[in-house]
Image (cartoon, rainbow, N blue to C red):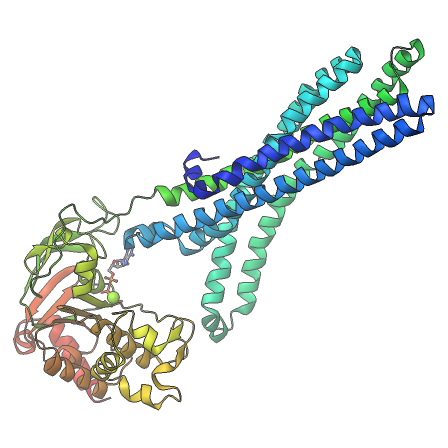
Length: 577
Ligand SMILES: Nc1ncnc2c1ncn2[C@@H]1O[C@H](COP(=O)(O)OP(=O)(O)OP(=O)(O)O)[C@@H](O)[C@H]1O
Ligand SMILES: [Mg+2]
């Protein structure tokens, strides 16, 4: 297994050590028991010595009870150790994901992260539990049992000594054959989870398009692939048991042959034969367990690599050593900015962007879909880093700020926004967890959300469910704006955040901004000209480039794209909808 993961064992080291210690004690007891049986048969029964039989019987029971006690203890410690280890691993991955930048998140798909947090960790947990329980047990059991057999009959000991490596070899061969199939199974799990997650997330869309049959077929297809792969792997592993049985009976046959000769010549007692058979069984069982653990470890191997991949991911953005904590003002500058989602050398989504925005200005951004409007503004709170050039806020390169300080001052309402499960109060307080009820209500008034919230039966205590499915699209957008306002940012970015709000309310929101937060720089991306018409500057985007900058009046004279959009919307009556 990937060694790096062992760091996460931490406070569960004690259990992880105690488990094998108790396993060893258990094995010692189990090895003594057959010896005791032999004594009862060979001495007690043969001499008809009842007190001796009782005495040895009592010792036998005590040994058996001790074995039970130690075994239970070992199982307990192994379970706690492995579950604790899994808990720590889950914590570590979760913490790591919190540090991920948007770019890091782009690299792993959500279902794949979920598989890693669940199935993969469970595999590692199982393998770890079996390892600390069984890996100590098997070799000690084999060695001690062999020594015991050796004291009784050298020939049989030799027979076992030859059988062990042969059988072990065959079992490991089987496990190795099955391994690639198991690896494939877990990769296929990702696809399966992906399908389930997409379907469940988009259940409403699936229903609206009556695509249930298609989705069921798709799911059935993937689950058949998983079924086939699993069957293939298990078919190979199924050879374990018959191989074991065959070897076991063959060995016992030879043992009886050898022993009967020894018993006839008087070098061996019948009781000793019984105990030898028990020892032989214990050895073979131990071998079987080792291969079982071996298979489990191999399955977990693939899982542990996938976990390590997340833990090893280098967070794209970290605070610089002497990070700036104060954003002086809300001015924004783009200097020769090039940006590609794929990093250097990839196709550029933003090309040679130069831009100067004064603190407190209202900026509108307009342009067709896919013209990189969202991409442009995402560079301001440093959701992504520029590929070339630099972005400054308050005259300082955004990469010089402490991330938290920067994002507290640059508040952004994302285009694809979500609310979280909890009350409206709780949701708005994502912006500032210490805000009073009055402050929450004030920003909701600003975002024109107070009105409809008051109309809910539970008002501000209304519970939001499932990312905000129980409020309307326009209501959700206004709640998201309120949440962003609560931060009292120096820069407020609205990425198409009023698209579902009617024009009248949209105008009221802008009026409130003008009056209540005049010193905040406001950047508004919109499809509607009316949303940006009164801005100090309007930026027209086209194909990742700035096509024109100016006031509405200026652009009407100089910019074709703006004029076309303006005329189509005004003539189409979109302004008065
Ligand atoms: N996370 C991402 N990874 C890779 N490419 C992306 C990513 N997000 C956007 N793009 C690409 O970058 C380009 C610009 O997208 P962007 O989202 O900035 O457009 P937009 O102007 O905001 O469009 P819309 O008006 O539809 O919101 C598009 O070609 C898009 O495919
Ligand atoms: Mg966009």
